[in-house]
Structures are given as C-alpha cells and as structure tokens.
Image (cartoon, rainbow, N blue to C red; front, top):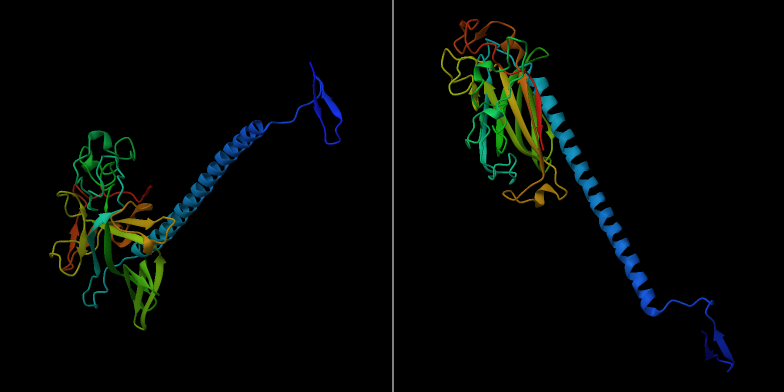
Length: 324
C-alpha cells in the first residue's frame, strides 16, 4: 500500500510502505510529558538529598558545639576544690537550675506526650518499666548504680528523656596561679548573640568572660550527694554555703545536660513551644577532690567517714549519652 501527496512544486510524491514517517504532534507531546515527569522526579529527589545533607550538617555542627562545651565544663569541674579555708566562704560550690515552661516540642521518648519531664533524675511521667533498667556490669560481683537496680533513676531509659529546658547558674573554685580562680557558667547574651553558654573566670586582677557554645537552649545540672539516697542521690541544686553541717561541701559527681539548636532557620526566628530541631548531650563528671579520699569535707569542716556508707561507691561512672 502506498499513498501520494502533492508537494509545493506541484509534483506528486509517493510515500511507500518501507519509508520512515515523522512523529505526530500527539506522539511528540507524550514524549515531552514522559521526559518532564522523569526530570521532575529526579529534581525532587535531588532537592530532598540536598536538604537532608544540610540538615545533617546543622546537626553535626550542633553536636560539635555541644561537645566542646561539655569538654570545657568537664575540665573545670574535675578541678573543683575545697577551700581555701582562709576564704569567705571557705568552700564555694553553688549550682541551681530554673526549669523553663517548654522543651523542644517533640515526643523524644515516644510515649505520646511532649516536654513532660524535668531534669531531676526521677521518672516524672511514670512511663518507666523494668525493661528500662540499665546498669553496666563492672565485674561478676559489681554493677554500676547497684543500689538502684529495679528503681527508676538517671541512666535508665524513660528517665529524663523528654525534658523541659533548664537554665543553670553554676559557680565554683579551681586552683589557679597564686591561689584560686572563681568559675561561673551561665546562659546569656554575648556580644549581642543570645543563647550563649558563657564561662567567666574571676581572679584577683579581674573577670574574663568568653563564649563556650552558641544556640544553647538548655543547660541542666544534677549533683551526686553521697550522704543520701532518698529518693535519689541526684540533687537539682547545690549550695556549699548554706547546707547543714553534716552535708558534703562538694558533690561527688555532676551530671550535665546540654540541648543545642540544630535547625536550618536562625534561632532568633524560631518560636519556643513549637517543634524544634535540637541535639541533646549528657555526661557525668567526677570531682577529683571529692573522690580521692574515703572521707569528705563538710560545711563545718569535720571529716566524715563514708567508707561503710551504703551509697559510697555507687556513684555513676563518667559517661556520655547523646539523644537526637
């Protein structure tokens, strides 16, 4: 079969069965739509890949930011010291946290609630079960935090995992050139930037303030009191200047909790109370002067023997936990 048509010059041309035929408009349109669909899917996938890469970069920056802060805090806290007895007060270690109204606005422990706990070492929302009990085995006869096996405490799952933000003001002394330095940590504004973890060092010549971490939404602390277990040895505040005469002047350990903003938008444009991208890091720092002896200095300066105390030796080992 063949067909004929007339060209411009009036000649008759024949289109035979074996001769190629051009694409119709409909076929061309369908081909364009298919290519557009494939390209559109590729572009969407590329955009998601770039966005995921950016989010990961922000999270890594926040983690590094928080790690640096915890390293600096740990370095100072390990040196926290008694005395000097000639100073007023003779022992100086003060820490207190103010719990904020909200947290990151997310259900971090997957229990259907958001921001329902405060940083206190307790199971505030009563979602702890025996399956959440976590205690490292030190040896065949020793277990980390052995006195709290079967009891919810900080270190277990579902304890202090979905937190309201905290802001701590922490002050203590460390040895320095020619005497002692006073160290002060708090979250405030530095050079016009809010939410900065600030470290102040005071000496006889003055006070120097420096930024330790930026975009800090929460700075929480707990203090391990070797003289008590009721309801937990973790205390939410510490003041060596006002506690009773038989209370230790220094905690054995300090638990640190830091939440750093990890979102793409500037923190100044983020609204507290709405879901926020954050990273949370925690660690335990042992205070060396409080650990080296089997006795500890109390606020009225006698030495109290704790070798036979049921709580002595149950303090937590230094560890780092990170929660996304």
